[in-house]
Length: 622
Image (tube, rainbow, N blue to C red):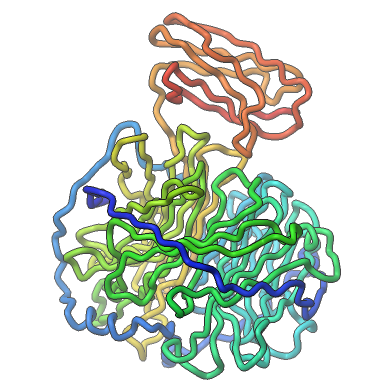
């Protein structure tokens, strides 16, 4: 399966700037603080589930009328799209390594709100709608809690917990978990948990934030999280009680929470809430924080939003929180950009017909679902309708010169026979020479393909077009998704997730949905490795590895070269370097003195005189 790319002809991006009227509310006292020990007896309480003859819970969207019109126009015949295929030997598909089912014992609720994170120690947290499972890199279960088990006895009798999000902090070697309680103003809270150590099977500190910080009859929905070196950022949408999205949406909020308070288990959290985020007198809807790709040492944080209910639009909102929660100087700014391609609400997706069934999958709207920042560029992704087709695909945007005069270019990722939706993106490069090295994961389904999870590798050389690999199928579905026989619009699984393995350059882990043999949503977790081919090095040996005081580097060159060798830490900082060494074809050896370096994982790189990477390898310092 190849990936279809619509080539960008020119950039028409414009930037306008909005005067911020945002209000900042500081240090709202947390509703509750408590601790949970995951090493205690796993809580395997059976979770409530809907009966098979009940109707599937639909996402309530302002875009419903657009989607209904598209669905009425769509016919069950595969449309051959006019596309161009771009692949090269240098940009090969990611290699699929360890992969396994990521769902716990029993039912975890519908749909799969997939989220996952992996630590440098190889702990994986897979959170799915109403459960949290801790696994190792082979998929063996190390711990389990339901969200109701985490909150048991702390937040009253309500059993309504959902939308988990999890992230790993490589700077402090901690996990952070966020999920929601309640869907009314009377019970709405944002639950935030921090691990006490790098081991998530031990103690966590949990906090319940007020889900209606503005008061009134409102509640928080749809969280997205990201973090930098000091702060956790949580974005939510604020809704009025018992009203639809069309009538009940109030605004989107940004929470800024000091991470160290949570790691220390303090009784309260230093935090701010940014409210009143508007453009043209109307609230900006569904804001996605931008996760740093590798370097977390930022005082500021970026966010993205679009017009998620649009039939066709090119507006991109670039938000910035300018400083940390502890600085006393954090403010919100907004730039309004124009992408050179348009996005729009996609139709629902076709599944195969089984025994006369016609169960489609919901694709929701076109909000930004995932974004990452590296070397002054933001890559982001969202679902979209495709040009000249009634089909769902992936919109991949790139914002250049983020801190200066930003501009937006975009491409579509599509298939002539499949629908793609629910994308996530992560940085897969090793240094600035790979600044556009990204892996995207997303859900796929077709008239002849059961719902599953896929991935694609993206790269781009300076001044050249974007290059995409062939699409890799992480998991092919075993059947259609047919959870609710009374409804033809099935819940597909509202998210995928992806994270870089910070101590293994070029490695990412992803999770997504597939249809299992029982006709239900299930979860697949997969390890992917980007393997850039050697250009002029046949052999590359480092010894000893692990090392304490020095490392010898041996390489065999196929031609004369001028090379630079760098040792880079997991934040992307060069800690040792041998520059401009002339070598002739044949074997060469170099000696690195590493005394004084902190223990941990590093990456060793060989570059040629044009700073093109010839090879890389993981190095461990003891």
